[in-house]
Image (cartoon, rainbow, N blue to C red):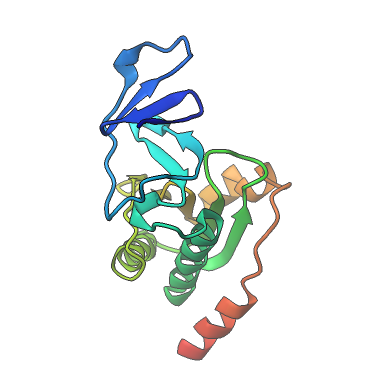
Length: 192
């Protein structure tokens, strides 16, 4: 039986518009890793740039785990890896009350192209190998002024200092509460 979320129904691995003016041609293939429970608790549907993500208790195969807890786990893990790779000014913003598209922003600064690449590659490796979560998209890697890693409910922004100051995401999203990183910074100092 198909289930619906935000004007779309999922049936036989396809997302189709339901009760909207959008043509059926926008439907995209829906894939999932791991085993999916027979009933899903769906919060909302996200489909940026043609990529479809369903925020539910089963995102990326993590069945029966609270999505908010999972998103926070991913955000804190990304922040920890950034700190371990000597990122500066690491911030995690709780976006859940401000956006339906994502739960957390992780924002950090690297001092060189090489450092931005190392931070992004290590975050990607850690989230995939240690937490079994796959990146949905990456932007800005070649230019290396602002690398964006999209994990669906968590978006990681890795900036060089000038670009971070110019775009000022923390000011743009000033209403978003900051997640405390005190325990992470303690771990990073102990490891460094």
